[in-house]
Length: 468
Ligand code: ADP
Ligand code: MG
Image 1 (spheres, helix red, strand yellow):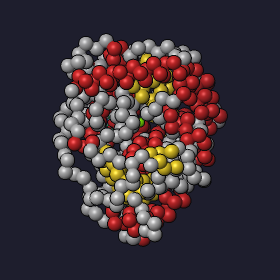
Image 2 (cartoon, protein in one colour):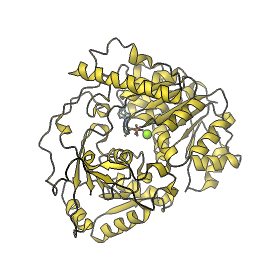
Image 3 (tube, helix red, strand yellow):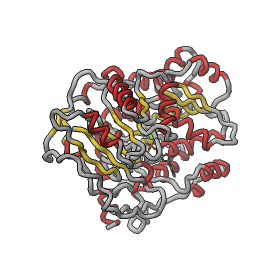
Image 4 (cartoon, helix red, strand yellow):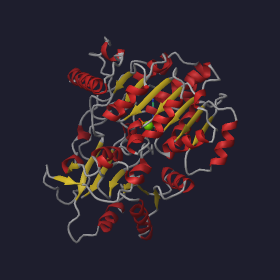
């Protein structure tokens, strides 16, 4: 069964490989460990081949559990019906995402009750962290951080990045992409303390999260970073940039601002990472991204990470990467270890009441609720507060301090509920989210996948409910 799955996986890999090749006109170098691996048949090693494998970092088998179905929600809609999610007044920063609006989403795609009963294929990495040719001190820090073995994307991209190849890494959310680029880049900086790296991410929280992960890895080293994000005082960032730093991690808007103020000189940076490149495009950062890449030295090391590979990403890759290695460990379009269902709101029924009845159940311990607009999210958080729930909110109308505090409170378990917009929650890694509730239907299936990807992380099970 494993071998069968693996074959299927490899087929998919090849398909997506040739697709991306032809659509972008690239001649990507073949990812060697994929094609020439002799041990493939006996050692299934892909996270993507089966349910949740990419998330099971430990080598223990996921237990079968057919009994965990939640209480029956109101009757399912007929499968196959399509829902037109189009509506006006997008909350997403400025509605630059025109083409994605109004996608027809098949409601049956919000339901997935059976998957948890599947048995996960154990992922056996080809490398252990100790096998990588990296500084021993860095290895020690990785272990201290509790990472015992690489995730599939780490397993496959780290050797290439260590070789200095340009690379495109495609993998689902929650699969450890951050460490996949940070580890080899930190190693580069350890070898040459003058080395400078710039990492661009679509949202402030994500940039901060990347910096946190970096700080964990560089404990005790003389490696410094500056986090350049909007919403935080620029004066502080400007003065931090005057000190020695090896990493700049930030959002495109603020980085561009700092370049224009001559606080950042991109000519000094020989390595660049675009994290969540697809979402940066969606958020309208394409011009900023092109502007910045054009300012960088021609001889540089360029890495792209993304959950999807669109023609637009293909065009960027073609223009800015040199013979990139393409690594994809993405085969499932849904987080398969998330149990999914819909909650049908009957006419005359109050959505808020239905939500209330769910939230009072003991298993709804750490709940992330998605709303469509900033205003709606705020209103919902206040309404829940009035009903006695500990609810925080995170959206673009809040300043950085407020967003960070809300997130921290939720992360630490001091609030049961975090209400968020899609953009604010993008890429966030919050441990132990028990439920994701789509109070408003997501605009696109991509958004849906990203939303529910906030639960069921790191091999844990999660549940997602969509109000329809
Ligand atoms: P992505 O960027 O792909 O969405 P992240 O880099 O945010 O994923 O990682 C998801 C979670 O997995 C984080 O909590 C991270 O600490 C954890 N993680 C990453 N790599 C490993 C590893 N090798 N072993 C254990 N946990 C890991
Ligand atoms: Mg990430």
